[in-house]
Image 1: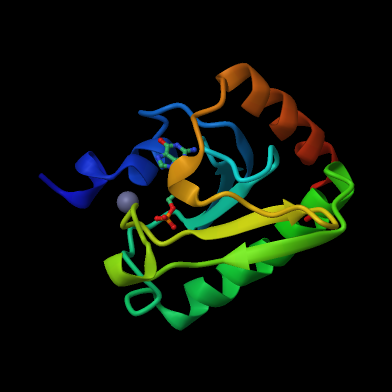
Image 2: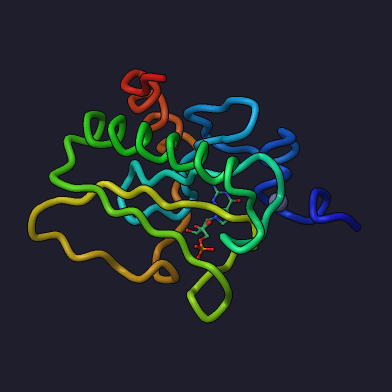
Length: 141
Ligand code: 5GP
Ligand code: ZN
């Protein structure tokens, strides 16, 4: 079995698994996290399967981070966030659970403490779609 068959993020890229997609181009995709730290918590991924920062080619990583910035700008506007946290975990020891490189972009609010990733329940597709639609309106390429 290739990573493309077994990896949940590859399956989202191939439209074999559902996701609330905000943006995509040839090399990158942005969609909402199914267990969000805040409602508009987005994941930015390369479409190609690279496990970690140690595997991704420089040019793809540069493009990915261009899209990370655009995502941060869109989220700040759509979620009226006071701040934006950007997290990227590499390896089990760093807390990585999905081994297809991804950058978390999370809206933050004054005084709000975040729960641990593993304590968050899945949210409904309807809620994700509502948040995604709001963000799409603010996403400028
Ligand atoms: P990591 O701990 O690897 O940095 O984060 C993996 C993230 O992927 C978690 O925040 C988790 O909620 C999210 N995730 C896992 N499976 C799915 C899925 O099927 N769809 C979406 N949209 N997010 C997922
Ligand atoms: Zn993958």
